[in-house]
Image (tube, rainbow, N blue to C red; front, side, top):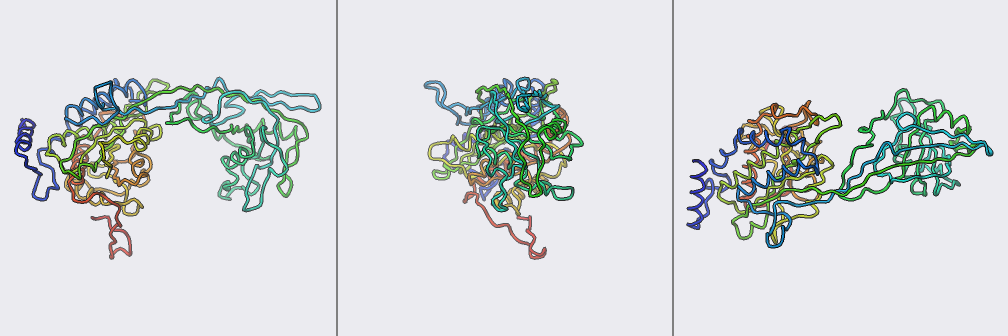
Length: 533
């Protein structure tokens, strides 16, 4: 009955041509719209999205496709206009924005390493086993087989500032290089490897000289007490697909050899470093045969988006975005389902309720868009695609992004927000967010800056768009199969959703669009930034 009366009210408003807002200031939504966001309705969405039926809503899975249809159906029910790709001929826009995925899976059974020691025709072949005798990070390594000579390059350093070049007078083009890990100055308490002695710097120094790959060993006399990279398909990256929007740049393989293989090479080739850290040439000849197998396939996934147009002739071209990612981790090799109730079925459900609340409200001046992105768990992929390929009404631009990611756990009276007053991207959304949180009985706390770049609003911020990110924090079920519906604090999720709705309404109706501002300073705190609005 409440919704029937609200729709009747809107019908009268449209017929009369009168613009009506929640109070005299026009900055508050109608109480009926706010009250329409309930814990039970959020729970209804959450119960479905985080059910075992959805099998963890993995990126580019059949289940994430089902979740997208669920979101689109609710956009349609809320009378939101589709804002996605063009449909079939004559059908106009859809609620979906497709984006491409390059899926690369390194195959552990296809990895092989063979070392050949040659002493004047007398050869010794050493077949190395992945995980026992060598490890490598496989992603980015091109599939195929490489066989080449190996050149010893000492510590493999290239530091122009210190005038150190372990590659001087060495020809490494189209060869593997053999280098010691770290540097001669590394020792206990030294603070760890210097920038020019970390493995990435060593690999780059070899790559820019045309090396095909790199073999890494511990210096003579220095042993690994425990495996630094314990082998499994999951933690090395083998047999697990990696998704990206574009093909990953190729990198030479960087293969770390176990200490027994190191000892064999040091003894056989008489490897050492002089006092001036220049390498000695090997006494014998070393060749390597390296094989790497990769499965590559093209897939696609979808963002879901729709909007409600604003009523102001000029401001309707300024769009306030509500965003949330609706994907999660899927199912692991053991068959355990990662339901992702908090992460992020909670934010997804909250934005659904916010869309319905706007549908029950008189329209504000600016347009409001609802965006659910996939691929967040694989590297913010869907939001990155949208940020670079924005689908908007003709002539429109985005003025704010309000992002909800994990909003149903931890302290029921607190919600984290970022950017904080100490953050470079602090903007006028933040004091407004603090105010609407207080109205909902929530304390907005500035503990979320460390997660600023780990959620989808970051891709909007990179484009200069003011953002606010609501986040209830990490918990013991984060990215585990135990993040289930039964643990959700539905009342908290509803309060956060109502606060975000209030903020979005104010933003859509305010005279001025959000912008970066300087945080106020409290003179009583020796220059510390005051977190009150």
